[in-house]
Length: 121
Image (cartoon, rainbow, N blue to C red; front, side, top):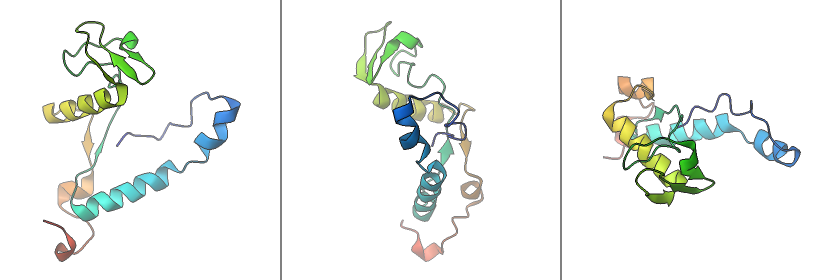
């Protein structure tokens, strides 16, 4: 999950302020963590810098690669949905062990706060 603690420190249009600031990111995070822990799914927190500007095929990073929801690499020409491209980058960086990821401490210890019989194998 993306670390959203500074999400409200951005400038927004007046019409967007209410909808963005009334959303409870903390509540959503707690519900996702609870459900993931119950199923034994590890949780990682992501520093999202450049994940939507980096090409998941060639690794080229450029702000011009992303235009709205469209990602088009200026180096290799790959075209894809920008969110899908960012998701692949996050998964790849996690597999490589890049230090921008931190694992949820409860899962490192093996504690999911649910009885062993409740876990799905």
